Image (cartoon, rainbow, N blue to C red; front, side, top):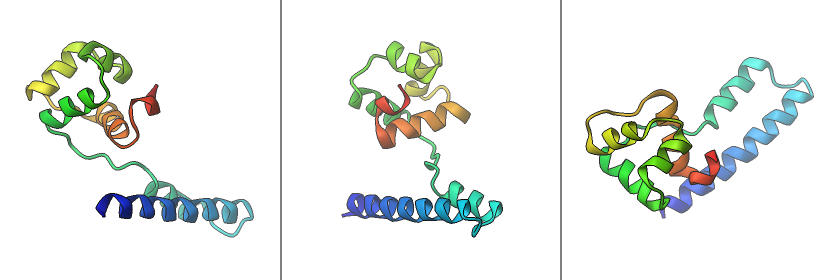
Amino acid sequence: MAASKKKADNGILASVHRTAIGLSKAGLVDKATMREFDALCLTPVEPMTPDEIRALREREQVSQPVFAHYLNVRKDAVSKWERGEKRPDGPSLKLLNLVKARGLASIA
């Protein structure tokens, strides 16, 4: 139920965003309001545990070196994330969240 509600919410939000884009092009929505709509549509960036990162990589059926290549990081970084020695942040965490939401093909 939660997954279908999330998909429905995403569909509604996407429809509202498309409408806002149209209104913006027509000059009926200002740039500040449009930035707010754009921010709402961004994939949320949430911290990930070592087990979640490992499970994500295994779900995508890739090795650590291949996963690292997709994320544009060193293989050692993925290994340390999965062991809990370091935590991903910045662009790496954003990419991990995108892969979690949309699959590895979304960043290929």
